[in-house]
Length: 112
Length: 114
Image (tube, rainbow over the protein chains, first blue to last red):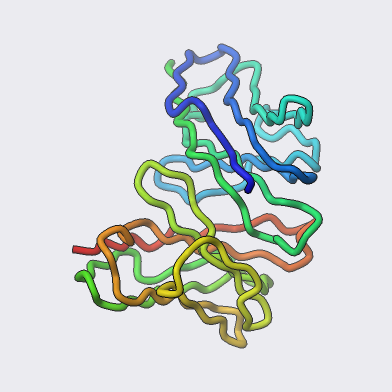
């Protein structure tokens, strides 16, 4: 069965510092991985997906199949990045559209 | 564009009762997925509806059932409520063509079972 692990429940950094939110997964097939973000009083929304290879709001994430990781990184954190971040996996290749397995989430706080 | 809308926003029920939660998908979306999010946890997949049929199901008992209507809106029903069913219930919509359609989430319905 697939599993997503976010080892840090809380992460605090200062503005301008680099930030890395860790995500590890277990899945035997070819996963499709996402990062979702929930800002205060807002709904859960997609931040980025690995197949797009985009940089959104300065965030990037690289899928490392050897280490089964999909860590989210940003070189210079901003206060507006403070939010809850969820890593999620969709087992691509089947009929699993929309069946995401989420990690427990990491609360990122960026201090001024 | 109103996005995904869910009703009600909050609900309090007694153990053993039944509850119905409602979801209207984002305009243009045809697929609805339901998730349960317990306090301090990530969302957990309950099931997904497309073309008025349940297409996929997560590890939830038969007490959890759903329905999708011809206008793509959906309902989640939970029978014989347990205290452990207290959670935030999220609805997410998408297009079945997944390559171009990430999930769009609603604000959720907070269910409290006493």
